[in-house]
Image (cartoon, rainbow, N blue to C red; front, side, top):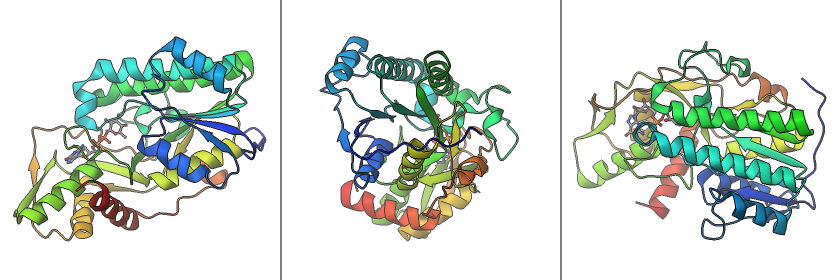
Length: 315
Ligand code: GFB
């Protein structure tokens, strides 16, 4: 690993691309204590798919640092149903922002990817060097290919132009600001909503997708935001860094924890017409731990906090 090059955010203008999303809003909250000026742009103000507009925005605002948290995201069904959107939108967003950042001399940029970049059957826990060693999980290969391209863009600008661009690969994230729409969401918001609505209506059961046997690793968005700021300040190298808790649960175990958080006591049944996705994707947390970071919010605590947020803001 290259020697650490500390990068201070104090006094800097820091652009959070995607500040209305779950991760972007978490990063904005986390930056409040860093002494920096946070720059944001709503979709109405700046369309990241529009290369010319992105260049104009960067020339006008000239940020020192960029968190690239803007992306088209969704759960397993959304990924499987809209492959063109997931590939095209994510390629354009990252290419436009990275090139515009280079043109105005951004000092440091952190690109956010996803654990689905790894081969479907990678050895577990998955180490960073497993990238591009095997075929991808078919339900989300389009999104994965776009995110792999983002990592490679950051590496290419580092190699050709000496840019200090780094990449973080978070595991499955959840928390305040999540998407609770049942067709497009990830598993945690979907099951929180299903259990909540079943409790309110007095239903005897909730339905989960698939067999419940896949294993997933989860991280609260506030931990992810903290990790991103930590990496921005302390990491400077070409290889991406896994951002996870280092622990996973089966979807059935997760469902039981969610039923407990919601106090829903009914049965769990399965919709086997829906996909399971990859059987397991537990990432190795060794690298980020060696960089001095570890998560602070356990899954039980995080699920309760997310349920409280859902009840105040959505349900
Ligand atoms: O969170 P999720 O949609 O994403 O699904 P992936 C995780 C697991 O939960 C799958 C099961 O095995 C689902 O079949 N599951 C059970 C449910 N019930 C439900 C439900 O009601 N809704 C949902 N959504 N799932 C995504 C990728 O994969 O993970 C993206 O498609 C991205 O590219 C993201 O990487 C983090 O973990 O399977």
